Length: 462
Image (cartoon, rainbow, N blue to C red):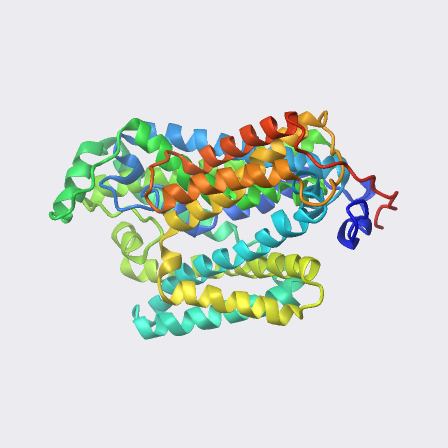
């Protein structure tokens, strides 16, 4: 393919016409709300995915709630809004829009192929925590957990390839399950929230781990951890805002969909989890903070109810496992058209199983840091590209756009340094975003953007 010729995935792309668009409350908002109501997200908002004494509540409930709101707004305004506006203005999906930032050849790999690869990390996380919840039927038996993990990932991958249209119908209602469970736990603990004492929580956590050396967080550390946890969790979904935005009629719908489905749902789900954790500690004296674990729910409600609540949370999580497989399959069909999707998705599912069975997928803060390091620079570069091009999509650029790739490498490298402990980077996914944005802007002004290739006039898809 010559530098001036567009690959088929761009040349044959058809914009979604206005007649096919729908309101934010019928598309963007409920879909994103379903993501933020996933129990794997909100159960660790009080811990921040770490074993630090007191987690994100160590500096007080008010500080934790403010940090949560800040992280929710960062997700909406920095990671979602520009991709969403790109999608709305063009009617084109992320893997086409990304070609203006990474080039017609480069966009084939990033964000398209990378989005597909990372979905198997999500499938591994979903498989791990869902299997732990379902294994309550078998008394938490370890062998049963491993078997469930294998079956869960295999079935989710198969349905994602072949039967997602049926799962999508059920998935419309399943997000109500975790919301109802959060409300039940909130009602059970709300009377104790006023008695919550962050210092006592930290002391109880330290007493439960007398050999531990971890230091509780102060306010700055709480904000940094909350941003790392929430933005890292959300980063890929933020870039996918292009795919949601292409289904919205105008900028108002893009904005309202994000403010409600992303920022609003994050604050509601994460806020309820924080309130429940605070009230539960005041009620029980236990420093356990993972609010969807069977042990936590048993202490708040009862053993019998906790088992069934855990199973219901797993059932509600199954469609998202199928959607991860679907996104990966679509990505691979586009970027690897000559490879049977059963082979590519099968290999990815096998990786997901390994991540789950070994327990690596259970270390969510590392998973979220990897995702944040990968997609933080992408979202940052896209934001700068949006403003440099006059708030319009410039069109695909030739080859591998140097500004995009160098800016991504810089942000990703910084994230890796934090992950491997070479340097400590507070709020690493956000810093990776800022590095990607800054480098892209500087490199673009220095003339390191490849030339724009004119798009052929494409008829909107019916």
